[in-house]
Amino acid sequence: MSQLTPVVIVTHGQAGADMLDAARRFLGMDLPDVVPVGVEPEDDRRAVDSKISEAVARLGLQTCEEVLFLVDLVGSTPAQLCCSRCDGRSGHVVTGVNLPMLVKLGTADRKLGPEQLSGELVATGTKSIHCE
Image (cartoon, rainbow, N blue to C red; front, side, top):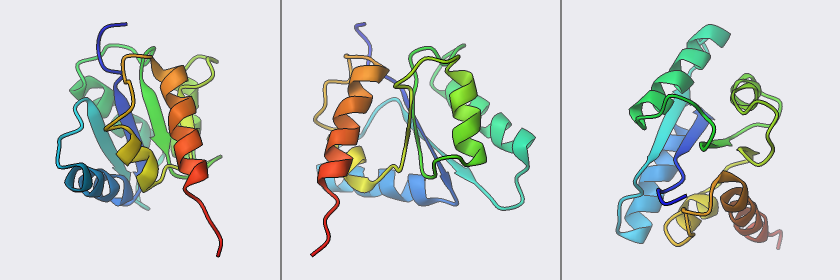
């Protein structure tokens, strides 16, 4: 794979867009091929699915085969819809997205593909959670 792994961030409200903006500001750089999707309380399953499809299309893709989905809540409708697009392949949907994961996108090798990239992001996101 020679292109950057495309990433779709799906969160309730504008959390994904806000975290993406914060990561870009922190890094002082753009994060290409990363698209946020905001899910609103009034969005039904079909509306959420349509928003995800639009995000994939904005990345210039026909399929989700090489897309990494970062979602806020495990088991949520957005997470279920993203999983259904991955056709049973693991490593394409990561739940519990946080700001450290998005900052890591700026330094990770995004040419590795969604499965390897997801492992790096999960390691960073998990390592960044502390209770003091």
